[in-house]
Image (cartoon, rainbow, N blue to C red; front, side, top):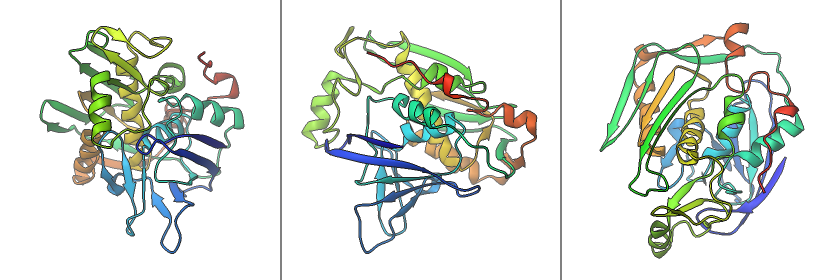
Length: 299
């Protein structure tokens, strides 16, 4: 599966190809545009080195890949645990600002079950982090559930909250088409700092007070909180295995979620690695999805 689009930071064209991988390989990115150094970067929580605007990972030689959260959400949301992702630049293409194009291609290509046990991270007790007025927790639950709340002054967003059990293809059906969002004033401020040069109304929901400036308006009345849940799923995918637990976020972004994973893995009493029986496998995100579950395209 190959994708071409614009990078969020540079605004330049980026080409990315997702390859299947064998059992226990995990998810890795390969920078095809670098020479003479290790070009493989692990999609792992402890490889995250920057969370400004997006999630960026790096390897020991300083090779980085940024804006990985939407493809990571698509992979875990479709039940993919092993893949090699080749990209010819420092960032993943932003596409339309959601995971929809990735999900559509994954389900169109089809999924193969590997002849290997499925392991998951079971949350045994609550872990919480607070950063300013943002917070995030992981607590025990039989399957991955995400609940999220946001509160923005702009009337086009306002206060939104949503809870979803991520089993039964919930990511594909409820979240994958929800786009990243920002305030119009923030676009000008970020570009003045040389940031988000590839961001536009074509790949984000841009709001200005009560107005939605993006052509076509919203895909969901609560698209903003749905996208925050999408981001959270993508960032949680860096745990390295599916999570059995409840994630709760309030105004949490990429940095808060990564801080939460670091707090979790710093406390061995808060989790354990379990081999999933058929009941647990059936409750994982992406379990049971087929080509007919592909998301409907938006005009």
